[in-house]
Length: 83
Image 1 (cartoon, rainbow, N blue to C red):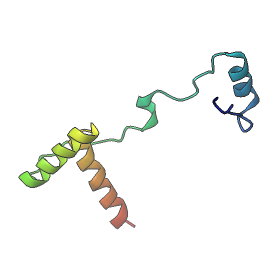
Image 2 (image 1 turned 180 degrees about the vertical axis):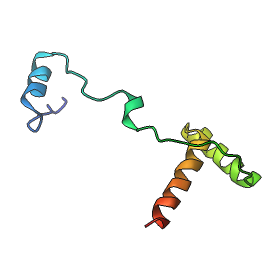
Image 3 (image 1 turned 90 degrees about the vertical axis):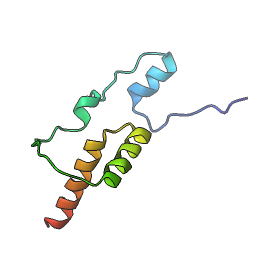
């Protein structure tokens, strides 16, 4: 027999919805609004084949575009040393 889960910390409306099988309003924003877009500028840069291969392989595993990964690393570096 499964142990019954008690939702004592949940808001009243959520507990009632669970008790009576009602639908709960989805309050989360759509994925495209979770991460704000930043202004970007296109440039041409020559990177080592080793670096590109590394990021492309990581991209396959994480399903995150490799250009976005490189941009995030550069942004993190900039934030760290701009202090």
